[in-house]
Image (cartoon, rainbow, N blue to C red; front, side):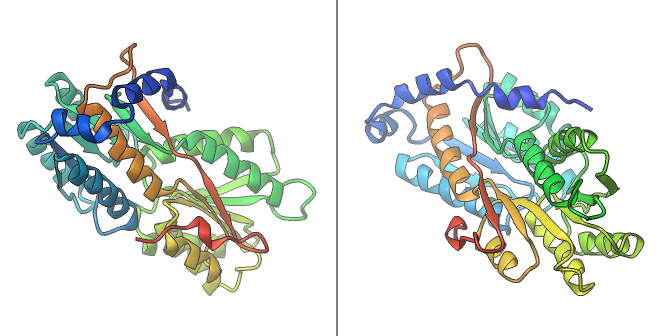
Length: 329
């Protein structure tokens, strides 16, 4: 399957972003006081109360306080219907920038298009709609999916003496991260026929559902070699099921996530084994900078999205474990 997202991420508009940065130069504070004080930014996340969105909001608030524009959060609390309503209200309030955290590739596409058509710049953060907008800050999901799949092949594939059986636990099958990571991972697995994906069930981002899925899979496939969870928070439920089954030394639990201290604690507690972190704290700073630029009129010369791709940190259990790779609220 191909959704065209990979090319969107890779088209990072690096030259355009460098040009946008040139708008700011070394006098961001002075220019911001003149040009962006008093402007309005609204953030509509999937949910607050988790380190990912709380970390982003903290950094975006810092930028707003520094440069004198307002920053408001409207929390959908994991309710997609409420999120659509909140976004509709946010558009009617006419902010200068709207920051959107997409639960699926399609849910908010029409509203993102509407906002842009009404002159509201939309910054998509980490999870992308299939509707392009002014800017995106987030992870390269195709790269993460490929790298984790390659590591799974190394640990579970030919010559390892392992079963090659893998369970994948997305948050939502139609979320951008799951679409892109699955696409990239399956391309790797197709080149290694010894790898068998025995389950690909979404947890709806819920740790308890991920735990139940994993417990069932382990009953059906006691020789399971690896679990690939698409977000560390719900994957901890899967890791707990592995630990409860007494298989922590047999089943590798992979996850992605924002890389906060809770993820490191899960590795220390042998709940997770390897986390591909996109560093939510750094993403928040990047989002704040991108907002500053958008408020000053930054745009890609060719009309494409401005993209700031998040650097990755790989946090692994074992001798190479490094707790400093995680951040704290």
